[in-house]
Figure 1: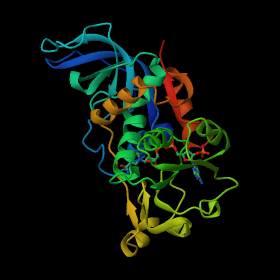
Figure 2 (figure 1 turned 30 degrees about the vertical axis):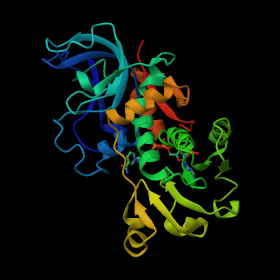
Figure 3 (figure 1 turned 90 degrees about the horizontal axis):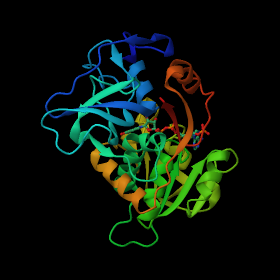
Length: 314
Ligand SMILES: NC(=O)c1ccc[n+]([C@@H]2O[C@H](COP(=O)([O-])OP(=O)(O)OC[C@H]3O[C@@H](n4cnc5c(N)ncnc54)[C@H](OP(=O)(O)O)[C@@H]3O)[C@@H](O)[C@H]2O)c1
């Protein structure tokens, strides 16, 4: 089978397609034919080394692709909940990443593709939607029945943001989404409190004061949003870096945000899809075979889409 891999950290040029042995399912594992796998910024950061030790211990050559949707091809002898032919979606494992023909995973890391979603849509749930669900639960949910809890999501048109705002809306929070033009149009259909286009509008300019402002876009510092925070409001960044260090150390109201995708988040996403409260955020699909060129365009900022970019296989 084919899989995308790399031997050294770096840009898209380190990627190569390799012919490798097909995986076989261990006792509690399944092998899945990948039909779709979404691109996440984390994929890129793991490959470039920006996430430090995150994938240091994955064997080299390392694969890419953190989530997938596809069809179960084989199940291990101790798996009784799935059979070949089932449509599933889930998180890949370090030794078997999903920009590949086949992935091997523990059976309990996948869930059935919900009715009404195609494989591309389903592939955005394990990382994008699950992380969005966690972001909303941890940082955007009103406490103790508070009715005027006002939050702002910067980068609301991205792979996580598009989901985080939908989950946050359903907690009862008053959600302001900040995104670029085309994304802003999509977000307006979600019934949020307010949608701002970052190209022409600012949070402070909205005249509102927010209890939480969370940045998923990696474009904002504490000083950019301070004026828009309520008296006890807090700025949270999903991409804490050196530029944030001063504020994170000296300002009580600047904090990092962490939300790691897991099956709990995936379950919440699937449940919300079932209630018709979650619109899947596929921005564009491309053939898996073109992954290197697609990743180059994605990483160099030429792929501007609303939601997630998904690689698909027939
Ligand atoms: N801390 C954690 O635990 C954790 C966990 C998972 C992910 N992350 C990080 O979270 C970040 C978000 O992930 P993602 O998948 O949602 O990324 P993404 O799909 O790249 O989304 C980022 C979004 O920000 C938008 N944007 C750019 N400039 C903006 C501005 N000035 N104001 C508002 N929005 C702007 C982009 O829109 P345009 O197309 O208009 O540029 C894009 O839609 C990534 O950096 C990821 O690595 C952190």
